[in-house]
Image (cartoon, rainbow, N blue to C red; front, side, top):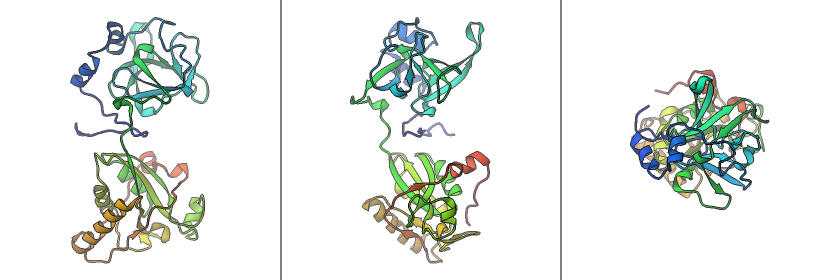
Length: 315
């Protein structure tokens, strides 16, 4: 991964690790007690933190960089003297590492973006996770529901795009690896049936195409760049098939979400047909305003990431 790669969590927050200089800039306003805990892995005294008994509804954010870490709906009374949560707001916002200090082995938890020390996680929490994230109050700030988040606590202004180009396993996998794409989800789109199953779509009777819903940050990657990638990873001249896969569910299709995406997609195809990789054959890609997207079954999600392999890039 290059040093200038921007990382996003599933919830759309920028979690690119801060540089040492950036961390020091954020740390300038810390009190000595906060610096001891946050920067040097200290521990505040039990039952002394200002958030232990906080019963307001809202979000607990990193004291150093403002990244959202925990929500009030996962907070529980553990009796330990420190704020306790059974899960983070986004698993990618909290990292873990082994801690062998003080003659014991524990799992330290840190902010994924700024590496601020938060506390430790233990396997003695309530359902549904069975975990107890034990956090120092000084490592957190609290944003009550209805209050505005600081800039560092807001998700990026993400947009959505939809593409169908054969088996959604490969389309999802390749898009998800692009810088600026925060999430890619396999699903079904463009047919008549509500809540179709994979079996329904494979029959060809539903009219749905296998498609992928893409969340992306337009400040990092443009819609035109997504279109260009789409035309690299599939063959848009094969009609109702893609490679060895036959059927209308494998058709090449773009589902724009608004007039601007429709304009860009139509212009891109025109240019591609005149002077692009596929200029020698008629492009069969359909361009249809995005209908309702139905998420596919869980076993289809992140298929290649879970099982290995990849899909062939057409010549």
